[in-house]
Length: 233
Ligand code: ADP
Ligand code: MG
Image (cartoon, rainbow, N blue to C red; front, side, top):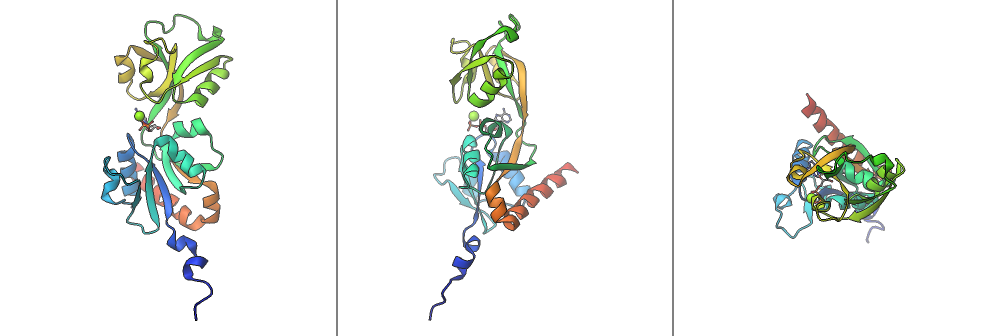
């Protein structure tokens, strides 16, 4: 006789690991350090930029990680395709997903979202008198909201990189981009004229997943919380 229900059917969470979405690229390494402090170690090819794998097992049999574009981390978590993730607060500001809960500031990958323009024209006219302005950015929503709050209509030229080229080539008057040291701006003849927001990376969680699996996901959040506390001391 076969049992009417298998253990897997009764407890799907036992067989389906939680999925954590992590950004590839610039902050992959810093994320790896935070993960390690939380005791989570993905298979070694996670740090291999050349691997074609996108999903990796970890030392925790109940947790797999997926490696995606930084903007896409928020999307995977918002739609519940990943239960948990790490992404920049810039990305959270841009998308403003109500399904994403950001319980922890991991205090890594710190930078700022700024308005910058050519040093030659900076301060040459009063921005509060503009009625519209052309802005190159990969953050259309942040940019639109920022300028709208002072009554200026931003016409956005959406770029995915090399924003710094836009003003000198006549694509836009100003740019909205991330700034850390300011060296890239300087090398391209630009200066920061305003800081819109301070940025750092956050642990993010899908709200519905947290409600349906409070123990497993709550325990994961706690691992990151204590990893952070131990580095503060
Ligand atoms: P992508 O190339 O996928 O657009 P990046 O790897 O450049 O993304 O950036 C990913 C995240 O890293 C950003 O969303 C931001 O939170 C953070 N970040 C980007 N640039 C910097 C920087 N110069 N200093 C610190 N953190 C940064
Ligand atoms: Mg980049």
